Image (tube, rainbow, N blue to C red; front, side, top):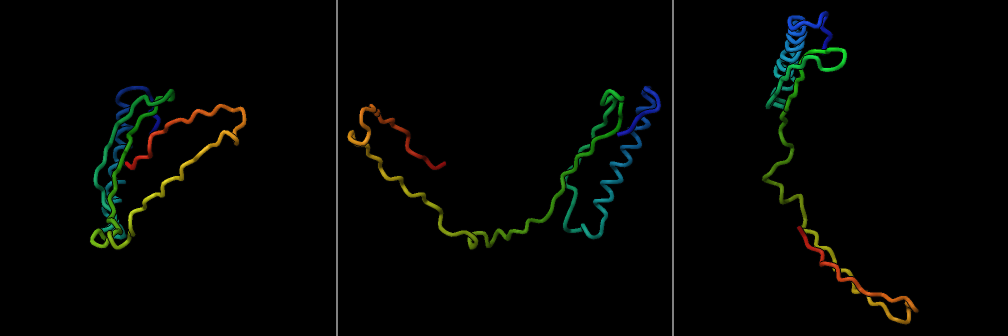
Length: 117
């Protein structure tokens, strides 16, 4: 983002051009770093130009980058890292005696059984 010197299309375009260069240099920097080669790569990117973005008449570009990294999980050994599936225990049935409640009239509510998704 930058502030055009004047509020003319040419001045806005100059600021957008400078911001666009910064976005392209950023993409090239990420793509050419020796430490990142084979580890981080640019999968996708999006550059959107902005003009009169706020009340100060900012202009520039927005850069969105999607980076990819190798998955550290060996999918061939995935089953070895997990045990048996968890099966929850059934809740015990609750019984309410008239002697325990006194004068309170309790009408049981039938709730749906718990379903696994």
